[in-house]
Length: 126
Image (cartoon, rainbow, N blue to C red; front, side, top):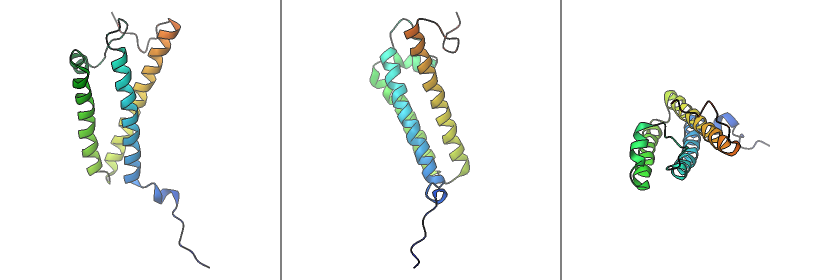
């Protein structure tokens, strides 16, 4: 009795799907980054490290959303259209690593606020 062969894990999770998965993770972390940025903007202890984002944050929150998610959307369209190339997969993993780094920074930021102790990774030089 021969049935249809089972799809192996490696065949199911091919490059295109790995690109989709990493881009989905980038979007999820980006939404959290956006929320935390807007919630902390204007507090005396928050300093935006990105000078372009700091300039845009002086405007309405909609401008920040259009800037952040417009660029992320454009990058997503480009990466999805080229998702079968190995370089695109590496690029998506790099984007995910950057987003994980941002998530760690946010964790350390909120941890330093809760503990009252400054952390050298988030402390801005004078």
